[in-house]
Amino acid sequence: KAGVTQTPRYLIKTRGQQVTLSCSPISGHRSVSWYQQTPGQGLQFLFEYFSETQRNKGNFPGRFSGRQFSNSRSEMNVSTLELGDSALYLCASLGGPGVRNTEAFFGQGTRLTVV
Amino acid sequence: AQSVTQLGSHVSVSEGALVLLRCNYSSSVPPYLFWYVQYPNQGLQLLLKYTSAATLVKGINGFEAEFKKSETSFHLTKPSAHMSDAAEYFCAVSESGGYQKVTFGTGTKLQVIP
Image 1 (cartoon, rainbow over the protein chains, first blue to last red):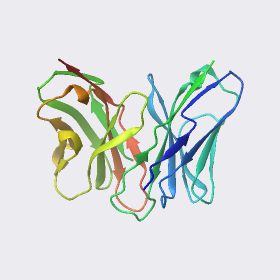
Image 2 (cartoon, rainbow over the protein chains, first blue to last red):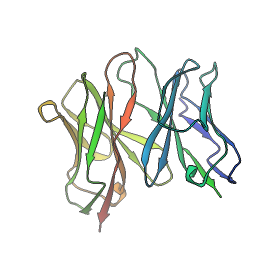
Image 3 (tube, rainbow over the protein chains, first blue to last red):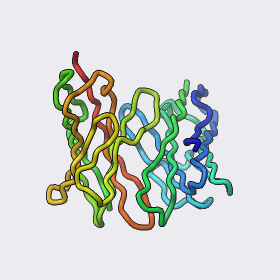
Image 4 (spheres, rainbow over the protein chains, first blue to last red):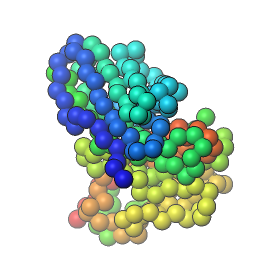
């Protein structure tokens, strides 16, 4: 079955702009988590969605938001971009509650560069 | 609350030498434990996982890890390092039960010296 698909793979934006990243989870998976990865901070949890509801949120400013659609696809949005938002954004797909032996499956990420 | 501590942000080994990457976890319930590998500009790939079956878990690429409850550890080993093993490795924990939230360690970069 197809893996986790993140688009676009690479993105260059200017400070102050906003950006939307997309993640399509593995078919049948209902949970999508987003992570920001930077050399200085490592992997930081942004938020997690299940059945269109945000269940968990990391310690990020309100400029970072997300949503999930009925087909489980998820988007994250960053408004008023700052240079420090430059990072690899990773999306992970999980089977969801009640699914045993489930690990997170990751997409290849979106590399965002803010200039 | 669950957490993971990886000892050593950078580890260097010679090609052919033993690889040992350390991971200690904290969890209030029986955990699921994972090791992931990440190559530059790629996502994370699952190496192996512990889900309360055998305590010695074998994964891909010759890696294995042993779950030791008394030490709350889940160290990753490989008998003989290969140049292609150079990557960053992440230990992760997820509490067993209905809701799986995965918490990652800070990662260990493995350098393999020829």
